[in-house]
Each structure stands twice: as structure tokens, then as C-alpha cells.
Length: 122
Image (cartoon, rainbow, N blue to C red; front, side, top):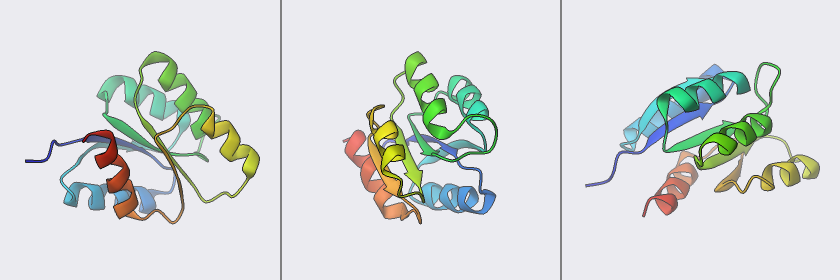
């Protein structure tokens, strides 16, 4: 039996967040919540203690996903999967410095997310 993985989704586009939540839960994962801002991601990561965070780079609020991930990783080593529609090299380089488990381009293909999660928890 597959281990149920707890996933926090940090995505400011509600339709995308709801779609990801539905698809991941159909795969047998537990989406412990979704948030729209970097500030909310930090709070949710502390309160919900997810196994992995699916983090959009551009979020609502003052703090982007890279800054939120840095803050979260400093406190607890939660694996981060970055996702973005941006093709900016500088942005990719900044995100890469945090050693994410993956960097996925939008539109997100749920099978790719599942593959990354499975590779973390083999």
C-alpha cells in the first residue's frame, strides 16, 4: 500500500490550486491545504507540517514563493517543488540555490508532480 503523502499547495490561482488538489487526492495523496501567499505558506508549513510543498514562484502578497521557501527551509527541511510559468533564467537560478526537488513549468502536468513525489518517498 502506498504511503499517503501530505502536500501543501502554495498557488494564488484558485482554479489551478483546486485542480491540483483534486488530481493529487485522486492519486491517493493528502492535500493538507492550499494557500495563496508566501506569508500564508510559511504559517501553513509550520502548522500543518506537510511532507512536501508544491510552491508557485509568483504568489499574492508581499513575499514570492522563493522567499517563502527560503524561510520554510531555514526552519524545517521540507522538500519544495517549484512551479512557474516564467522562463526567466535569473528566477530559475535564484530558485535553484534552494535545492528544490524539482522545478516544473506551467501548465503543471499532475503525472510529473506524482513522479517527483514518488522519487522523494521511494
